[in-house]
Length: 108
Image (cartoon, rainbow, N blue to C red; front, side, top):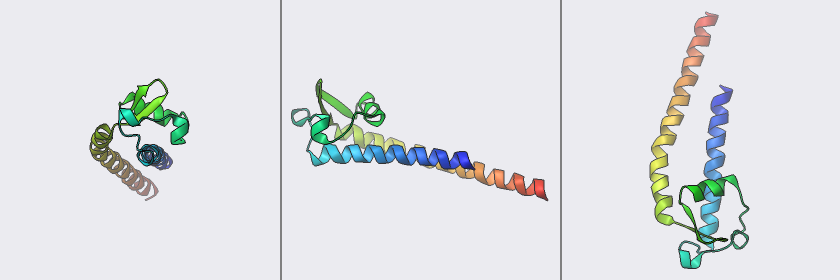
């Protein structure tokens, strides 16, 4: 189903954007308030993905324009997200299989 592929693509793009941000913070050692950096120093644009990470407390403000990665929150998010992603993918596979069976029954 086309929507299954679109959902998977969106989830993959979101995960890729998060990984890119995490790598930038870690490479710059911006993983504590005293080592916070500007987005320019991190070579990161202001984005919806970064705002989402900030809203969840994974990326934090040290000062108005200084950001750092909260590694503890990032690890918690990773542990919590894995079962959800597995469930979503399993549901999409089930829907795809159901659609295929229904199409076969309709043709037969």
